[in-house]
Image (cartoon, rainbow over the protein chains, first blue to last red):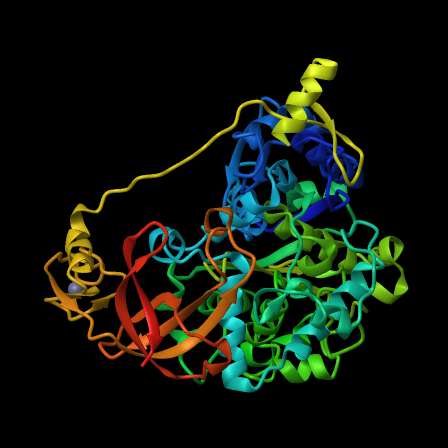
Amino acid sequence: MRDVAIVGVGHSRFGNRYDVRIDELAWEAVREALKDAELSAKDMEFLVVGCTGGWSAESLPAVICSEYCGTLPKGSMRVEAACATGSAAVAVAYNLVASGYVDLVLVLGVEKMYESPGPVQIELIGRAGNYFWEFENFGMTFPAYYALHATGYMWKHGLKEEDLAQIAVKNHFYASMNPKAQFKKKIVVDTVMGSRYIAWPLKLFDCCPLTDGSAALILASESVARKITDTPVWISAIGASTGTGNLSKRDMFLNLEYSGLESAVEAARQAYKRAGIDYNNAAKHFDVACVHDCFTIAELMAYEDLGFCKRGEGLKLIREKQTYNGGLIPVNIDGGLKAKGHPIGATGCSMMYSLVKQLRQEYRELAGREAQATIRKGRALAHNIGGTGHYAYVTILSLEKPHK
Amino acid sequence: MSDLAKKSIKEKGLPLIEEPKTKLPLYISLRELSLRYHFGTAKIQTFFEGLKEGKVYMTRCRKCDEKFFPPQADCPKCLESDMEWIPLSGEGELLTCTMITVKPSTFAHYDNYIVGIAQMKEGVRVLAWLQIDDPRKIKPKMKVRLTTVRREPEHFITYEFAPM
Ligand SMILES: [Zn+2]
């Protein structure tokens, strides 16, 4: 396998983007990535598009975006892994380059959710489990799946709704500095506590918004990367895992001594093993992390699933503000899904956009000094979950080339 | 939206509207898609026959003893398809729950509902609605009973939990 680097990144403004169609939205990120790498669309040898779809009009987003962004007639495909779609697209592109099949691949994550009304989106995401046994008769929603985890965690570890609110406060705080984020307003614990229940114990401000957005990455083989940039960001390792469709079959979260996502633990262990990182002391290996905080409880579980702390001790990290910039490990200091926004298929690429900017120490130019992590270890982590642990991808980025 | 689009065609000849919040122009597609799926039940027909008799069935692989709920006809462990159909006693212990207040569009006609997962005596776990008069009475690990019920207003048979 050859080493693979990210040599260009781009990101659209996230939010309610009634001003653009899906291909126009894709172009915003693609154009920025091409400019970043000083390449043209014609240089790309393959386009991998992460797009979950269903809520938007185009059935073949990879083709529509290839045409609009000028990568024709190169090969393309659409990848789906629910909310982990962006990371899955990166995994596919990584292998296209690592295998020697091509040298330059454009990865595009794009989602246009606001082409359908809100209730239809809620319905479609609610079906993202095992359809007959969870949705048809019981009407599960995406917040409800995570609420089952939140309740389980409360019953085991004495989690309070106010603790979850602290996570929302942190992520809104950092989103307020990110010019690409959907939400720009800082909030306080009372903002969360005063918001209405969506799926008890989760309230409106525990939930990420529905979002239109795109993010793009250019992946290159070592020899090509060296010609393009002096600061390639290497894909050091990828771990991937799949969880049961039925939440009722999750042994780990339903055992009373435990709360977490088995698939996330498995993906982390795989990635750490490939990168030579000790699971039990993982936080000290990274300068910064983006974790999948589609709901506040999801960020809390991620701390533990990734080995940033022991089981049941995620609460301590929150209460001590250890995941703010300057703490044990800065988490979601781009605002996270919670406040930056969560355009389903684009989220994984958006995480890697933020992490590449952080590692290159360019994030300060985007969002200011307070949001730039100190880069000492030269390593960053993206934890991207599809559904409720149905898919899990952990991607480790590094300034150091994986193979010497 | 569609009424607005019709009005707009009448006035301007195009289904173009102004999005209320952002005031941006939107083209409202005239092609509405409605989807209703159907899927085969032949391999687990016993489950549905059971519901009609007031029973909720699980399956157990006769070769390797693996237990399945939702019931399934094939065992991926030993590659056999020789299943024993076992009706659940209904006795369970509540492991987690949520109350859904923002509902999918196709569930909008129901009152807010509580969904729970319970550990059943037989070793499998079941997800279903929990009927309880006051949600404040819900306790971790409380004993619940699973029974078949008619869901109104459609009047179809399904299963749900109630406190024991
Ligand atoms: Zn078997």
